[in-house]
Image 1 (cartoon, rainbow, N blue to C red):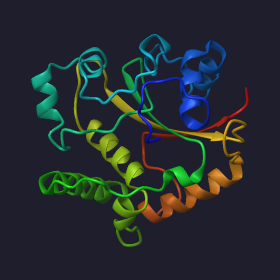
Image 2 (image 1 turned 90 degrees about the vertical axis):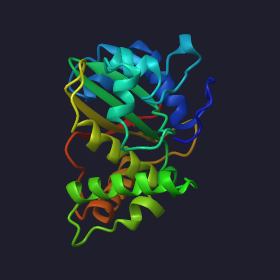
Image 3 (image 1 turned 120 degrees about the vertical axis):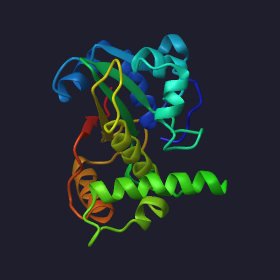
Image 4 (image 1 turned 90 degrees about the horizontal axis):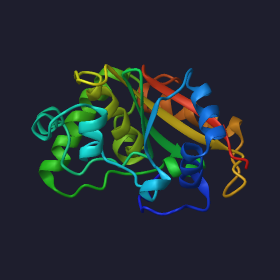
Length: 224
């Protein structure tokens, strides 16, 4: 999701992410899909006008991770100052859940947009390290990480580096790819289209048709 404005959405993945987090029944449904109750949702909260956070913001690095500002800067030096806005962030029993929500497969298409040379170099170095760890480099295509599915590539990169580090309040990070099926508010996308698409994306990016460790691919029904 690219729209990070702090407002009530009316359609698509932004709408559903907001609705799920702030609706007791839908939230419980998602928590069940993830295998247990998530004890604290940090965003997007109605009481905060549905604000979406970067990890570098104090509410997250302090309250969720237990870091000081200087500790955060040191640990997250693998990425430029401008970080991803996460569609939702939650914690449960020492696990940090980072959500990327999509309502249709075309939303997955993206290219690297950084223009600063130093930023680009830092991004590419970190993404190559992740690619080397997660992919079968003999058949995977690194260019797809930067020119076709950059947003997913940078989310996987954060996942990889987060799980290399230790934090006072969490011991593991999980990336949740939340996909809305049959969205009645926007573009209805059947689950079969989603699953086929992910197999192709993972095959291209990783050289295998399934996600790396600590990635949960969730298909959530888009019905009121």
